[in-house]
Length: 60
Image 1 (cartoon, one colour):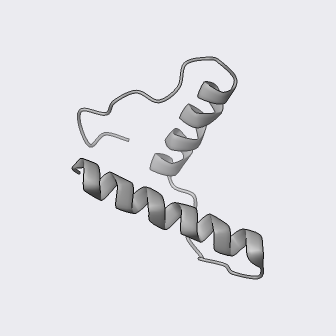
Image 2 (cartoon, rainbow, N blue to C red):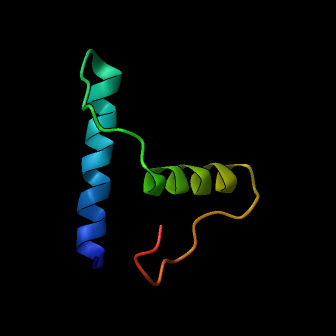
């Protein structure tokens, strides 16, 4: 994906989170391996233990 595509996907996720926080919205999306990797990366970054690294391939 290019920068614009990544930003659009991120914006979509932010909007989904906002809808979840505001009420009874349920997207029905299961947590997958890619999402788990992203969550772990952000949690590590917030804990001061590394964080987000550039992905150079489509591996999960």
